[in-house]
Image (tube, rainbow, N blue to C red; front, side, top):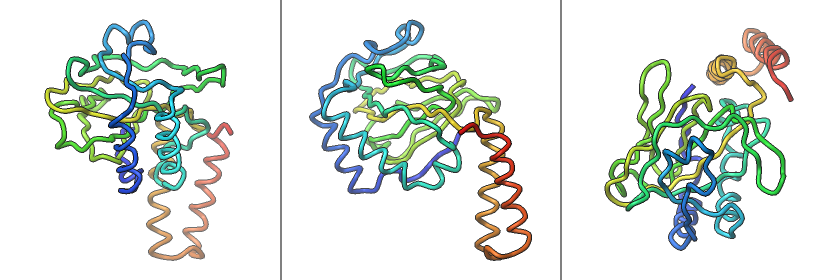
Length: 228
């Protein structure tokens, strides 16, 4: 499932994030790449342990916590600490690659199975040319370039790349989610069912017999499929 989630960051949070990024200490993104990814990766990123990264992580995680669509779609069991990158100038692209199946957290803090890959855009589309995230899935190539503050979720199994940035700078956050539902197909079905239930509740109310019955079915599927 490839899903566009709107307005993860509020306008004031986005302005704060962009202010931090203007003076952030960028470094070569290949320093933290795996063996295969390092051959394709040509960007910059923030050190995981710097003050700018910690401040940006707090902003982003607060946005995720209050976003019901994010929880419904991802069913997160664990979220890796968000990281931040920049494309532009001579460091402007990331070729085809697949994310590692397991993300080992800094300082021996544990590990996250990368069921879902996430990119939250922090630069407006008009501020740079190129830089589309291209995700290959069963429907072909999907090109993604979203407004600042918006995020895309896509399966960690996907082959994907970032096209060269030919003007300006593309800044973004990227991170991974270990979902309570390992199967992308199950997550998609649960998300669709939850969306339909929200519509039925708004139309018929919480006490309608059909709504109560379908809500019970949804939660029984959660019990069957989720690993908590």
